[in-house]
Structure formats: C-alpha cells, structure tokens
Amino acid sequence: MPGTRGVYFVANDRVLELATVFLNSFRSNNPDIPLRLIPFDDDHQRIAALAERYRFDVWADEGLLARCDEISLSFHDSPKGHFRKLAAWDGEFDEFLYIDSDTAVLRNIDFVFDRLDGYGFLTATSNLPGRAWKDSIEEAGILTPEQYGYRANTGFVASRKGALTLQGITAALPAAREVAPHMKLGYEQPFLNYLMVTSGHRCTSLHHLRTTTGDQSIPAEVFAWTPGIEAKDGEIVHPAVPPTLLVHWTEPVKPTQQAPEEVPLYDLWCYYRDLRATT
Image: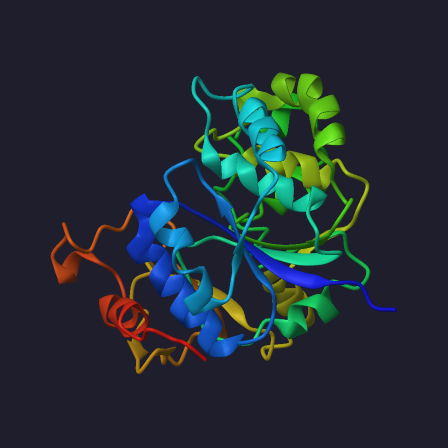
C-alpha cells in the first residue's frame, strides 16, 4: 500500500504576504495534495486563520519544534525558526516536499516524487558555487569534494520520513560543530547540507539531473534576482529559461516598503498575491 505524501512550509505572520503568494500559486497548481504549516515561531495566528481557505493544517507537535529550536542554538545565539524544517523528517508524511514560503510554485509537483526514486534527498538546485560552504572547506579535509560540491539550496527539498531523524541530528551535532567554522552560517542551509551529504543516502537535484542528462524538460528553480528574467500572466517567459517549476525570491522582500522597481519579478509577485486561489 503506497505511503502518504504531503508538503510542508514554514511561515509566520511577519511573512503573511509572502506566504499568500506561495499559497495562491501552490494551490492553483496543486489543489489536492496535503499541505502543512510548520510555524516559524509563536506569531502565526493570522496565517493559521487561512487554513480552511487554502486547505492546510498546522503542525501540532510543539515538542519537536522546541527540539529544532535547541538544535539551532548550536550555531546561533538565539533560536532560528528556519531550523524547524528539520522536524519534517519526523513528521506524518512518508514522502514529502519542504518548500520555502518565499516561493511561487508554477507547476504540479507530483513528478518530483517519481524523481526521488533511488535518492534520499532531491533538491531543486545544487552543485552551484557559493552556497553553504566557505572556501576553507576544500582544504579542511573534513568532507569529500563530492560532499561539499553538492551545495544544495535547501528551500526546496524532497525526501522520506526517517532519512534523517531529530535523534540522529542531535547525535551529529558534535561533529557538525567542528565543521561550523567552514559554514556560511546565515540560517540552516549549511547544516542541512552537512546532514544530507553525511547521511549515507544519495543526494541530487533537478538542476543536476537536467545538466548531467541534457533533459531540458526537467523543470527549473528560477531565482527572482537573476538579471534578465521575465514573466507574464503568472509564468516565466524568458526564452533561455527551462520550464519553470518555482520562482524563489531568496532575499528579503517587503513590497509594502519597497518601490515596485526594487522587487524583482514584481508583476509575477502581484499576480499570485492577488489571485486568492480557492480551487
């Protein structure tokens, strides 16, 4: 009997407008798959009130989230809600996607689960320079070139329950803290990269599969801040871009405080912000 599949996202009320873009776009293209909010912190009453409209539920096990907060304190002076995505591996879904809420999802995501076959972790983008690790990781001799070369964007991760566990993650902390001087410690991304590549499971990404196989039908993650990217009617139309699965803003976006010309792909942003998807 097939296991359960679902999608997790992390958000709170401070990113309500961001999350509305995500929810409208996601439910427009994925009307039926179970969706669950992992609260970034206790400030999530307004976004939780959207649960009926967008057909999601709210993560209920506060104990697991508290453990994620404790893990974040191994790398930061105060709890970072980004680490709460780690709870997904102890969650309900047998196969799952985690998607950042600063993302517009432009296509159905069912195919991602088929691509997961044979891998423990499948991200949208990996094997690009500059992510997760400082240059010093190459000389440290702690990870292999294949491991630190993975350099995945952890805003979109497909995996299976149990590929990681909070118990195992906690046990890995002493070794991870030794690697911390070589991490680009913004949020959880370098630590999660470390966990994935040292887990014993195979790791890949849609980007890596597309570039190594030449299969240009594999949809892409587009970073909104990339120069020259264009959109129309809720779709990316730039001729040099493969079919687009998601648009990821990846940097702080506050449209109410920024002029439209300061927000990349602002027309796409507004299209999904105002869509109010209910189907």
